Image (cartoon, rainbow, N blue to C red; front, side, top):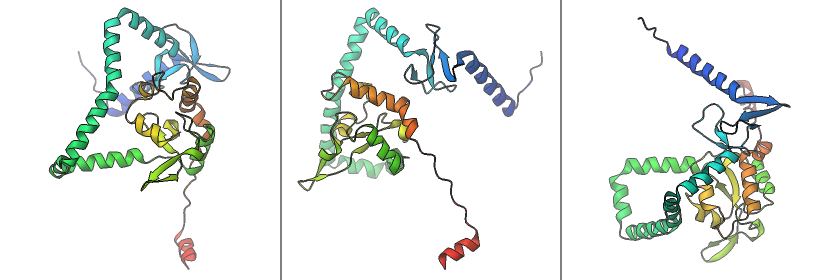
Length: 263
């Protein structure tokens, strides 16, 4: 039996065709709105973050195959069927803040002993790699007007604790100085655009650190409110799209125009 070898272009076409067919089978337009069928309850629901969790591994639409309601029911059922595993998982979650605190104290002790400098001198490549990641992660692709609208959406308050900008101070050489709220990544390792940015005070920004959103901002957090939680979820899932500004096209200059402007 002879086998035909496909070219990379043919493989890509087949892959795109499979994606198109799968999207067609799972999605349906109802009254001009894109709906997706839940693989569990078989009901069509709007294909947005309000009805389906995000799933980066799904390259077709970036959403989970099960709706949020079915995912919650599954989680509740798993909790009932696996009480020991659930208790073990919760103990790890509750112990994480203490573990992070002890790690920070140990790191501070090593810095004072000169261990950090010694490691940096012995591992220049890793230091450079981490510095590049940190610079890329801190750079937000948000223009000033988008940031202004983002703050106005959250009433010029910290999205987590509700602290107003007017009361946001930071200490400089022992003196309090008023400053703007910080551009906070909801997903610490996520994208740098408006869909992953909320205004946050320095206190909440530091406390959240590398925790996931639901891991840190829940009923165990003293600043948590259901109202603010829902508002953040609505912003990152849908409402941020209303405030994204299309980038201005770069103006092209001819050599004559450049010379004219210089002169």
